[in-house]
Amino acid sequence: MTKPILIHGGHLFTMQGSGVGYIEDGAVVVTGSEIAAVGPETDMRLQFPNHQALDATGCAVLPGLIDAHMHTPLAILRGVAQDVAHWMQKALAPYSRHLSRDAALAGVKLNVLEALRAGTTTFGDYTNPIPGWAETYADAGVRAVLTPTINALPPGGMAGWLLGDLYPLDKETGDQAIDKAVRFGRDWHGAADGRIQVMLGPQGADMVLREHLLEIKRIAEREGWMIHMHVAQGDREMEQLQMRYGHRTPELLADIGLLDAQLLAVHLTEASDVEAARIARSGAHMVLCSGSIGIIDGVVPPAQAFREAGGLVALGSDQASGNNCNNIFNEMKLTALFNKIRYRDPTRMPAWEVLRMATVEGAQALGLGDRVGRLAPGMQADLILVDLGQPNLSPVLASPVRNIVPNLVYAASGHEVRTVMVAGRILVDDGEALTLNADAVMQEAQVQARELAVRVAKDPDHRQMALLDAMRAGQL
Image (cartoon, rainbow, N blue to C red):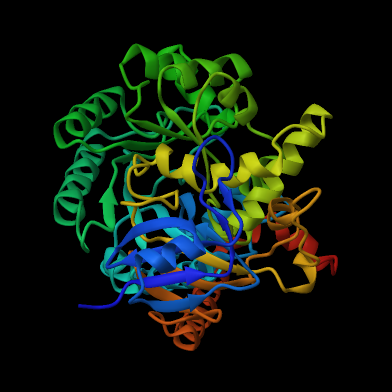
C-alpha cells in the first residue's frame, strides 16, 4: 500500500468555517485520492508516522482554484478582439467562423496548460463538443465540468443578421443540439473516476426557442444535471427577448421554471441589482467573469447585490479572446478592485471574500461543494502550494496583521504556484506540468493560430474588423 503523503511546513488555508480557515504550522495528510486528515503538524506526524513527506515550507497551501466558466478553444484567438465595441460581431466573428477542429483542440490544450500551471484544478468549460475535448481533461488529470453548447441558430449563425432584427432561430437545429448534448452527457458524466461532470448549456435564452428551454429543463431534472447558461449577458439578449416574448431574461426564466438551484447563471451583465437579487433568492448560482466583462463591455456585473441577497458567486475567466488570460488569480484581483471602484468603497469585496469565491464558494456553486473547495477530511485531495518567497509576495507576516491573503489576491500572478495536486496526484511539480507536454502544446497552438490567421485574411469580411483601423494607425 502506498504511504500517506504528509504536506507540512506551510501556511494552511483550509477554507473551513466562514473565513479562510488559517492553520499556522499545519499539515495535510493525503491517502489515495482523498484528504485523510488536517491539523497541527505535530498531531499529524503522530497519527501518520509511516508517511512520505512533501515539504511546503515557505508556501501557502490552498484548495485548488475553481474556474467556473471558460471557453477554452478560443485561447487560439488570444488578443485579437480587444478594445472594440460590438465585440462579437466586429472582432470575434471573423476569426471564430474559421476556427477548425484542430485549431479549437489546440486552444483547449493551451488553456488547460495555462490555467493548470496557475493553480486551477477544476475547469468549467463550455463549448461545442469536438473529438478530443473531454479526452484532454481526462488525460491531463484535472477535474472538469463540461458543458456542450446548445443553440438554435441555423447554419451560418448570425451571418446576415442586422441589429434590431430577430435572430433566425431554427427548431430543428436546436433539437439536434440538445440530442448531441445529451449523448455527450451520457458518455462523460462521472467519467475519469468521477473527475468529469456534465451540465446542459443553452447558450442564452435569446439563442434557443422557449420550447427548447423547457425541454432542456425536463432533461436536466431527469438526468440530475445542472443548467449552465449565459444570463442577461448583453443588451442584445434583452432586446431579443423583449421582441420575441415581451420579457427581460430574469422574468422569462422565472415564468418557465428555470430560476432555481439547478441554474448556474453566467455574467448577469445587464441585470439590475433587483433582478440579480431575484435570481439569487431563487437558489440559482452566479458566475462572475470580471476580466472578460470589463474588457468586452466595460461593465461591473451585480455580484455584490447577488451576494447580499444570499446567493453564491463563483469566478470564471471566460475566454482568452476577450479576457486575454485564463487565470483565477487575475480574476480575484479584478473582482476586488472593480467592485471597490464601482461602489467607491474600499471595504467591498475584501481579499478573503474573493478567495472564498475562487475556492469553496465556487465549488458549491458548481454542485461540487461536497468534494472540493476545502481542505478537510473526506474531501478530494485537490490543492495547490504557492511560493510565498517570491519578491511580489514578500515579506510574509503573521502578526499583528497577517498579510498572506491580501498578497495572494492583490499581488500574485499565478506564476508563483509551485505544486498542483488533483485527486491525490501531483500534476504540477516545481512549476512544470507533468501530464502535458508544454513545448508541444505551445508549438501546436502557434501553428494553428497562424493557419487560422491566413484563412481569416483570405475572407473579404475580415476588412470590416474594427481593429484594422488601429493597425493602419500604427497603434497595434
